[in-house]
Image 1: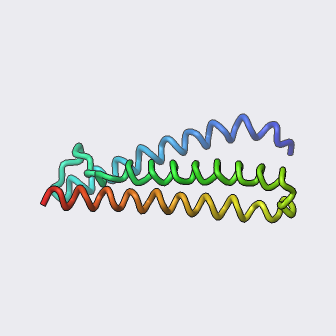
Image 2 (image 1 turned 180 degrees about the vertical axis):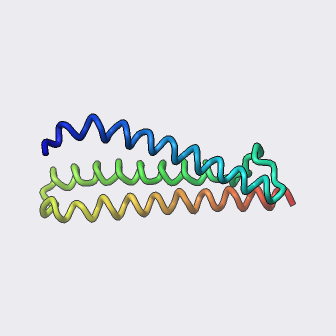
Amino acid sequence: MNAGILVPILVPLGLFALIFGIIYIRNRERMAMIERGMNPHIKPQSAPYQTLKWGLLFIGAGFGLFLANVLTRVLERTALAGGEDENVAIYFGLIFFFGGLGLFQSYRIEKKEVLDKE
């Protein structure tokens, strides 16, 4: 059978199943909350520093990627770089290093805020 015939049938069917499944699961979740005596319209509170943590992680990873790119270009100009395989380690190392520094800075900010509140 030709796959071109099945696509116009299966795509709308899959989309309908996806939307129906989301609505069905959301309704089941709300009914379970009502049975337990909870208000289903109140959203659970998120962690207050979650956005800060992710922001600093991505800033650190982006800075590490930028620095790795600059370092790779400088090494290529001075002919100290061996090849493409050796430069990959620079990228991964600096991304993880500066991403970790971003997470560490987030931890320090959170800890300072907690100590200031006490």
